[in-house]
Amino acid sequence: MKNRLSRIIKPKDGRTVMLAVDHGYFMGPTTGLEKLDEIVKPLIPYADTLMLTRGALRNYIDPTTDIPIVLRVSGGTSIIGKELLHEGIVASIEDAIRLNVSGIAFSILVGADFERDTILGLTQCIDEAERYGIPVLAVTAVGKDMAKDARYLSLASRMAAELGAHMVKTYFCKDFEKVIETCPVPIVIAGGKKQPEKDALQMAYDALQAGAVGVDMGRNIFQSSNPVGMIKAVRAIVHESATPKEALEIFNSTKQ
Ligand code: 5RP
Image (cartoon, rainbow, N blue to C red; front, side, top):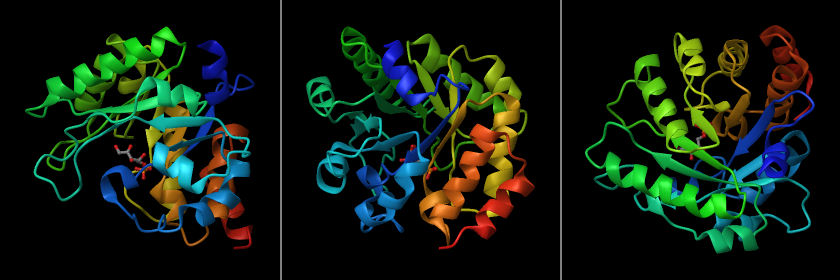
């Protein structure tokens, strides 16, 4: 377990840049990921971990690629369905082992009518993954009409940790320290919808300052006008304690 966790969160500084490209499991050919292999390949040297589905891993990533994998194992509903994020287990632990992953990820939707299903799915995954020393990243998904505030996100994050998750992925919010302080396992932030690079870098910086161990960022990297520049800038914030201004300079000075 510790060995795998160390592949995800780098022991040198206890931080991580996770590149999230798992969106296809409920969004299909997400803007920027239509040709997943082409966009991801130049980003891999700057990512500590790649988060994706087993189908993306099999079809788009060369098996000789040297990068730890966090496998998305929850799914079951689509962006156009009636119950967004009512997810269950969509990949077995045996397949995760066969794919040689360093961790698995499962989304819970606390506060939804079907929250119980997603929470029981998470705990089943944790029980199965613990048997093989595989860490589980709980993704605190947020429904369309739900508030992304510290009260809600600390509730969902703490619940995930109490239920046995080894890491939590959540959204950045005002008073984010409260989310960090009340969660006993490492937290990474999701990037969320694409925003101007300057704002996304500021968000990553603020999250790290508040105590997050890193980012698990997708759209703000692969939908950027300069994805390599953006991941390099994010990496500088996470691993080199760069300021948002320094990171933006890295973004601007990186050739497309
Ligand atoms: C949904 C997810 C996404 O699939 C994805 O990983 C989020 O990344 P980003 O918001 O940075 O695009 O976790 O809950």
